[in-house]
Length: 250
Image (cartoon, rainbow, N blue to C red; front, side):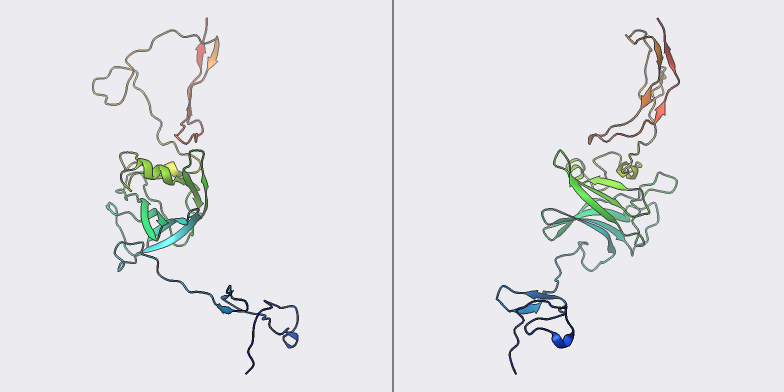
């Protein structure tokens, strides 16, 4: 049998009968090795590791992956086996990082009891996650994602690693059972509007103001006080509330 050497590459411009010698028209999973004329199958895959520390428990399903630089990937994971009933100490959805063939959980919020604020990432198998990433001015890795179910969100990976002592905390915010999921919203969420008591009430544990003093150098006019938040990443919310007009006269 004559030896065939495929050295002329892929050729699909003519019919089968006119196929040039030494070329091919279809080669699935085929790679050209460094040795000239050597054609072989593409290498298969092998297990690099397990997401769960107990490799016998394959409860998690990857809903989305954002590949970043330095051979690192951010994973969005959903437990699709265990049915948690609030209140529970185990979370249902989490964000983690796959790096050097090792998976590390970054944010894994606990499920709150019924009647409390929502604290679930709410990843669902029916809504795959797509996203991208960027490195901000401080060198922090920030990922952005959407799933057409939850609001578009952003997560600062390095800030989470730097500030949180527990995976149930978001950016080290304590307590961990506040409504911190909405802080991730790409269109910032401010939470409830804080207020200051204007009288010295002995039983009030919240901050209060003992007196209102006159003075200042405002020009004559009508002023409005507005409240907004700016986080450490310089992301600002819209104005949350605007006061009644305050008239300043001579």
